Image (cartoon, rainbow, N blue to C red; front, top):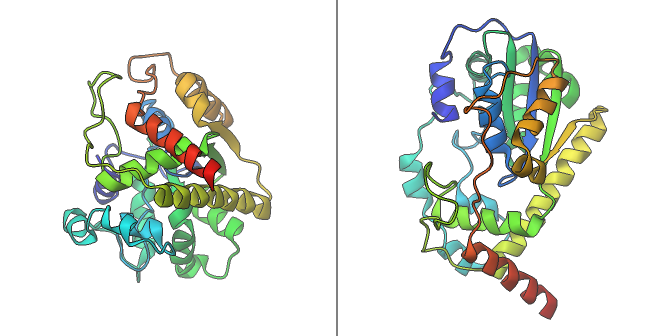
Length: 292
């Protein structure tokens, strides 16, 4: 189920008002999706989905071209899917309204809270400013600084920061996903099965732009944590890939939640998304950089 569906249905099971909350703060292709899905499967750590990804201007999540604002490269834009088709396929969340964002915030909190009173959500820096602006438009939250605003919206708030050390591979993965709108390997496919996106084309300009963007967005998160005086729990992509249960356990410990017994639902590992095509793009990019 998507975060949009979760918000509109606002309650897969009866949930108490949240007593504690956490935000998973990330950038795309950092391992945050698997981490959040596994946290949700514990049944005690909220349902950390992207409830707040709709942009204030459109009411829809970011589209591929919106990742490339400021890049003057018609070739890159030509390789991306058309926004019009994606807009037709997108479903606007029923609770979302620019003029009554309190309704969406309340619905999202209900949807993201498990019966033990824990709320979780995932945030990307690319839409975080829009979320803050929309939330600050709620009368009871108006005029607050960022830290105070979030503390007022989410009780006993803690932060988890997800980062990926190998930014080049992260940028390659993001460029491939944006071209094809294929974000993950279908369940049940073996690790050596190529992703179904043979239309994907290498582009130095696109990968270089996304690499810079990912670095700036991570710097944005770090600056935000510094401004509000918070030290988040940092979880690396490489840790999620190598020890998913351990990464989840660290977050549960930080939330003072008892770790559940291992089960097939929580004891999985990250499926390898990269393949020979991705690796060739990484090498092409590094070679192109060395020649410039």
